[in-house]
Length: 240
Image (cartoon, rainbow, N blue to C red; front, top):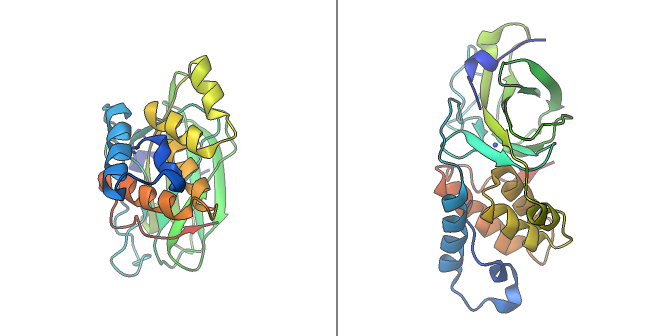
């Protein structure tokens, strides 16, 4: 197995009142709603920075065409918290020559725990990735996503890699129950108030698949990504 972890040493929102997710209660201006959502998330995100790489650089052979870059959807600290054993990771994949990408999850000692190779869409977009792994509470894990650009998959100079850290936390009993609730808007509020980056993105992505919550969830998604310096790809479509 190839290891790209050396390229990315250790490693992926703000919220408003939950009532903002109810269009029927939309009396608060949209801008202030998004500001409140973002502020709540920002206050609760951990401020511990770790080495990582949100943006992919150049590779031999100009794998990526245009000005867009491979991007890991992470806070600027390169670290995000999760309360689940199998979190969903998000990456923006630009137009490129690559037809496949590879996700690697490793422990703090750089030992790979899971690897997943995925086929890439033909058009640029944000991918949701869920490697088959069981993360343990109280542990940090590194993750990378690599565009396999070259004909020779063993030539690292042909690759572009991004990634960061997943910090698995053990939720309190009340929080664990809230995160398992039927209401996505309630789960979103719980995730934001607990500073759970990966759950926040996953639930906002889920809400965008529901016609009744799509527009508001989409605008909140854009606001969250823009607030952490990812505004350039915030409008990119979510692809399966």
